[in-house]
Amino acid sequence: MQKRISFLLIVLVLLGCFSACGKKDASPDGDTTPPPASSGGGGSQEQPEETQNPAETLELPDGLNFDETIHILQRSHVADEMYAEKYTGELINDTIYDRNKTVEATLGVTLEFHTAEGTNQTFATYRSAITQSALADTAEYQIVANYAYFCAALAVEGVYHNLLELNPVKENYLNLDKVWWNSNYVEQAVMNDKLYFIEGDVTISAINRLEILFYNMNLTSTLFPDVDFLEVVHSGEWTYEYFLECVHEAGAGESSGMWGVTMPCNSTSIDGFIASLGVDIVQRNSRDVPEVSFNTDRTISIATALRNLYQFDDSAYADEAQAQTVSAFVEGNAIFHINLLQYAGTTDFKNLKFEYAVIPLPKWDELQEDYLVTAHDEYSTLSVPINVLNTDTVSAVMELMGYVSYTELRPALYERTYKVRYLKTEPKARMFDFIIDHTFFDFGYIYSYPMGDPVHVLRNNIRYAERNQMLTEIQQGAISSDAKLREFIAKLYE
Image 1 (cartoon, rainbow, N blue to C red):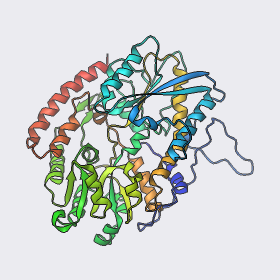
Image 2: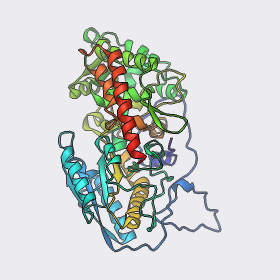
Image 3: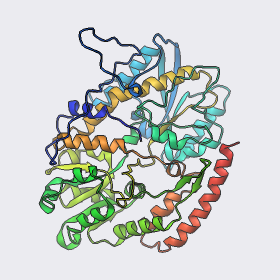
């Protein structure tokens, strides 16, 4: 998994408002402050230059000046992910504005941002904007910010450049070994040496939409006085069984007035759980070809356990009305709450009357190798339409945007979202770093849509009480997904 070590010191410098929790006070691993946005940089003869991690070093040549306009397409309802019109005094907006101006000034380009409708209900409009641009004589857009879930199908439509090669007669400045591109995503999305989408610090929606567990530290210190949940996670002991034991300490919520866990009964929590418990949707065989692998006894056991939690556990409050599950937690009536990481930046969470922290969702058991934190599938990825000719300029723009997002935008994002008075100790800062360090993407989740939605087969059997044919549906879903995956892979090998 991609390591983001320098984030810890950035957090410690900028997030001066985390509060005390935990029994151990781990120290940071040394100064790894990123260099300025330049390929050069001199050391001092009096003071030796510190060793710079190559993965954090920008390698664009000095003096690039393309004198071109780069057009970028975004979904209209998340247009502020990459674009800021002017200074507003809001930290993220102003950092994005500065980032884009830095890219323009450094590379001699003009960035023009365009939008099209691209929600769950209007994705056809967005897809049409992408394909019309890619199939035209001249590219209307040079960079596309995809809707990750739906756009996975475009990998076999011939509308995007292979980002591992781009235009062979042009320089490719993308370096996907750098920390600002998610290496786990690259590894999982590549098929037959082809990569059509990338994810990283430019696309902050992937960070915002990480599915994690909030917990009320006041309640846990009372109910579990000898337990430091941050250390339980670091020790590898945070399992589903341990989680359930803690949840049941609250008693039956309807009668006790206290819930063990609250969670929206929809994809924003269920999908995160499916991933965190290590359900393998797809595994690669000895020839590195993906094969459907979710029809197993282990998957059945996990899906059954989650169905019991969401539908029948008296200590769990799961509701389609997400706001109600949030309210129960922020009002102090629940030990845990499952939701997207971005909720830490909401007014409700900033005004809590108790101390809270965040940790990953649990592992299935201690045999599971590690924690797995995934992003809800509405995040953005980046692609380059196939008819784009100036791929040297485009790749340089993407690389510099990634770098400046890593050095400037990511710390600003964390300061804005998590710099609240309940999150100001080093152990909590270390846990944020830990969560990002365990960000997980998998071929089966990335390409679920063109595979016939195997993730949805599991989700729906957990989400809906009336679904009571889990074994049959999983078996049938595996057969259907296997056929669609074979067809999808065949097209990738054409």
